[in-house]
Image (cartoon, rainbow, N blue to C red; front, top):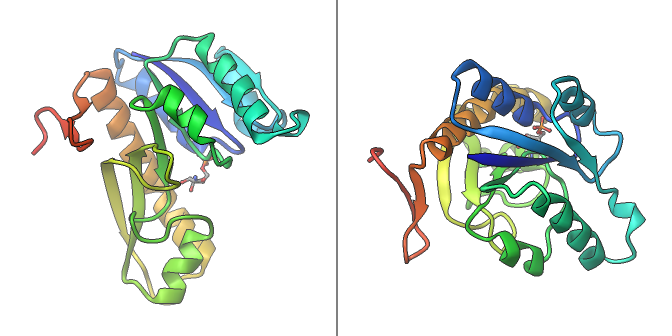
Length: 203
Ligand code: GRF
């Protein structure tokens, strides 16, 4: 199972995926890590692991469409089975999504459909929810929407500020995304005709 991972910064989710594949000897390989920022810390880490990296700086392109086109070409060069967004902070155009639909997956730091968009931990605290979490989902043209593959949940604790909640959640994000990559490597994830996710062997 050929994977390309897109990041914008630290890349801790990407790192966890790389480490999980090595530790569990999954039948998967990260063919490339690509970022919209040449200075993304995750790119340097991936390079040290001997993984191919590419930077496609969005500022180098006159339009969103031109950037997405360059990004798509960079991805296609690696012929991935799946493209995983992990801390990727760009909104992708419908044309890009259509090109990769069905093999484009993202992790969002909230229990979708609650709290789409940014500052999800602040949104959760402001509303006073008692449970927060993350969602791994197939990407569709509608932002932070799309068929859900897996979710992880964390309690909101008294005195939490956004950073405390974010760091409690990040550990769970890593576990959930690693589990999804295991399922992808085992070929167990599919979308049915209703665009609902089916994971073989998981109720
Ligand atoms: C994570 O919370 C992820 O859910 C969000 O960006 C944050 C940073 O992720 N999209 P990473 O450490 O770059 O993987």
